[in-house]
Amino acid sequence: MKYATFGAGCFWGAEHILRSMPGIGASRVGYMGGTTTAPTYETVCQGDPGHIEVVEITYDPAQISYQELLDVFWQLHDPTSLDDQGPYEQETQYSAVIFYHDADQATLAVASKAALEAARVYTAPIVIEIRPAMAFWPAENYHQQYIARGGEHHCHVFTRPIRLPERSSDRSRLEEAIETGLQEV
Image 1 (cartoon, rainbow, N blue to C red):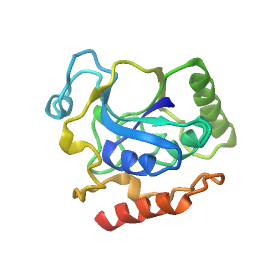
Image 2: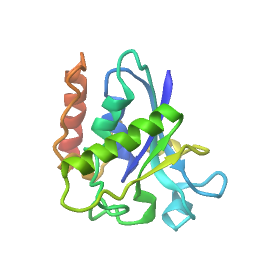
Image 3: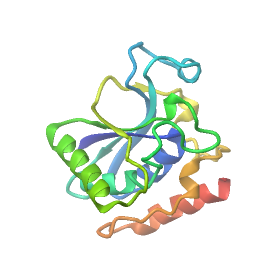
Image 4: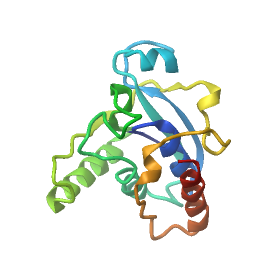
């Protein structure tokens, strides 16, 4: 199993989609990128310097590739907006970022960003950051699998069309996760 960590706005929706993908062993939401130890949701929302809401997943590369994870990640947010993913997600803790765990992930992340830029998929420049992974601080228990447990939300993820990986053998689980999230919006 390998780790992947993404910041894509509010961590609830991104976690809900990513954890539903085939090949994902576990997921948890938390904070990364800041300088303080043991941040809380309250301190991050109050501007704790540098911490970003992220989803950390473990995945089996034999079942799903990091590139396939990146392909879904790019769809989870607006990569032309660094920290504004919708009316409820307009602070620095909602920054879009890829935290890579090894050189291969860094290479793939940079290449996927360059490919989107070359294809001119977006009219504005892609502004997300690609940074080395740092200490991961798990969010409070009530944030973990929040949407799957029926938590009320206004997550931007469910206002976007998401194209599923073609090689996924269990697309119905992911499609169900998207549909469940849409019912909550």
